[in-house]
Image 1 (cartoon, helix red, strand yellow):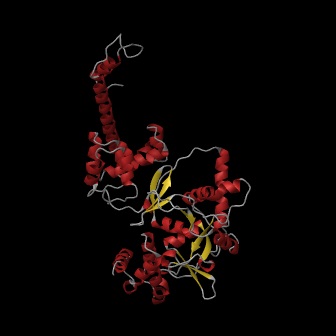
Image 2: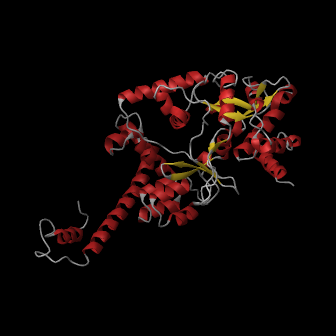
Image 3: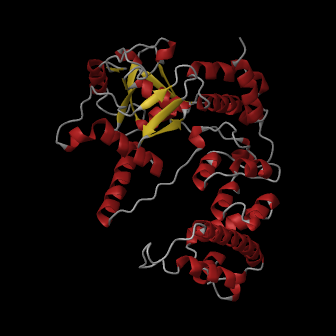
Amino acid sequence: MFDRDDERVELESVLDGGVGSTSADRAPATDDWRRLDRALRGIAKRRAALDAEEARWLVAAQRIALHRRFGHATLAEYLERTLGYGPRAARERLRVATALQTLPKIADALARGAQSYSAVRELTRVGRDDTEAAWLTAAAGKTVHEIEAMVAGRRPGDLPGAEVDPAEIRRSLSLEIGPETLALWRDARLALELERGGAISDDELLATMCRELLGGGRAAAAGDARPAGRAAYQIALTVCPSCDRTTQDGGGRAIEVPPAVGARARCDATVLGRVDGDDVGRAAQTVPPRIRRAVIARDHGRCRVPGCRSSRFVEVHHVQPRAQGGRHTMDNLISLCGGHHDAVHAGRLRIARAASGEPTFTHADGRPYGAPAPMTTRTRHGAGRASADASRSGSHDDSRGDVEQALREMGFPAAEARAAAAACAGHVGQPLEELVRRALRAAHQP
């Protein structure tokens, strides 16, 4: 248990008389807490050194396929049976061990005990040989939770403090549920997939369930119909009036969300106004309740996108954005499910009004919604050169659509993103990154 006899003697001297004794029996030594702290820090350093040593051996075990010598199918199985690591922990240990081979500074910090394994695990997600020193400096003196926050949303090669797209930040949620709740979860997923006509992610399912509860699920649970005039968003979003950055309140924390979330909420929300002063105005809905009820009734309570079956989780969207003069009129409002509403504000779906007044739906590249994508060079000719017909069939529109979507995801309004993407029309064929840079320059020109 003890690596050195002096540690055992020191611990026994600290604990001697500590159990069942009183202050009259023994006067506490004034430096006991320092000795305890020194012992615990020593253990932490030795544990980190062992983690570093284990990482080196794991790389060697992976190189020679050690698990095969014992008849195991994978190295993860060997680690579970021999070292007691579960499948997820085994995979993480192997990932970190492999990453440390190219990150000598971070590996040295672990071996010296300057950083714990938990901290190093996070640093190996973003560190590279040219940035690891900067990450170690930024992580010095921080807790593992603070380091996790620094790393979240960043990619290998990014520097600490670099701008992060909130949409790139993913969080894991671990839940313990019973068999009945698991069955309900699976049924809810199936019901939503049937309504939307396709597979959905865990993120989409959970977000939809939460919005339903916060936006009127209580009324439905009581046996009443969900009030069609009530705004879909009853969630606390805070929008900075100067920079337009948006945060969403969740469990007492303000979490930054992508610009598209704020834009989507402005379509169909209850607005409290400014809450940082003494003069608090009355709450108001972006769409008057009577008009919202009429829009939902006109659209038969379902999403208007062709082929969408969603009829329970419906929001109201402005075809012409309010920032561009769009009004709360029946011909400018349309019912959309949450998934398609997201697609509009992310730039993947366009909605317009035809001369007849009927809505038209197209993909970002101009194709009618649901139409197959044009065959690309790779799908038609493998790695060979595309024919002239294939080049004319859609590469121009595809590039503009990709650029426009990229700008929309950066927070540009639809009209500005479309105009900036059009300015790149003469440079089709260049890499997407270069087209986006040209579009950004065009967008910022006076």
